[in-house]
Amino acid sequence: MYNYLFGPVPSRRLGISLGVDLVPMKTCTLNCTYCECGRTTNLSLKRKEYVPFEAVKEELTHYLSHNPGPDYVTFSGSGEPTLNSRIGDVVHFIKNQTSDIPMAVLTNGTLLFQKQARDDIRDATVVIPSLDAATERVFKKINQPHPQLKIDTIIRGLVQFRKEYSGQIWLEVFIVPGLNDTEQELTALKRAIEKIEPDLVQLNTLDRPGTVPTIRAATWKELEHVLDFWQLKNAEIIAKAQERKELLSYRTDVESAILETIERRPCTLQDLSQFLGLHANELNKYLDVLEADKKIKAVKQERGFFYQRYGR
Image (tube, rainbow, N blue to C red; front, top):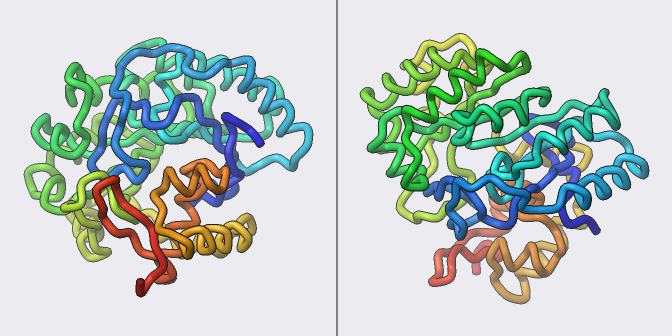
């Protein structure tokens, strides 16, 4: 059992991905309305060594010497990985240990206006930042940022990172119908995208309930409308969760454990993580498939969203 590694998990973009989680649960610079991991409990811009570098290095050494190499080592988790001031040391360690395994950083991009944060991840193979709005009003509505964050500063950081970084940038845009899919907002986003010059633009939307129950997923037709409006040659819609079941790492024993647990009583994501000893991001992949198969559903209660068997 590892404390800072999870998976490997099936990823819609990165194949079989070994996760590295460098911050405590829900330590982030944003409190996004769509976050499937729940509300941010530590909204912060402070970069520090949230988890010990030596412990992460020890776990990586053990994993890489006892297991086949994953398709990617991915910095992600239940918070913002660039908040960890030693993420650069972890990146360099992995590169020195095994140069043939690519690394990906999943980040909200909010700290890339800081040179040190940009330098820390410049040796990653792929950086996947998010940008859901290009106007301050919608940025605040969707992402509920730390009070000191401004969208113009974030966009300038992404533009500067593109100038300095030679790897792949896949910019993720999360569509929230009624907020960032109007003509005005899509125009502002397109202008920002053209300044950033990512290698790919990937449209995403809600798989399961976020922190605000009133937001909904964009339909496939709505996502296609965004592509048609932008007319960007490098934009795509991210594949649906159902395809994850086709990946070789999809484990039916994990699926069974989830179903058996919520058969006894409904559980939140955090409950399942605690009961089953699995990272929230790893569980998310299975919950996606189970909901798509209509085996479970999420029900809003006072303490958050609870998963229960479908038809109950």
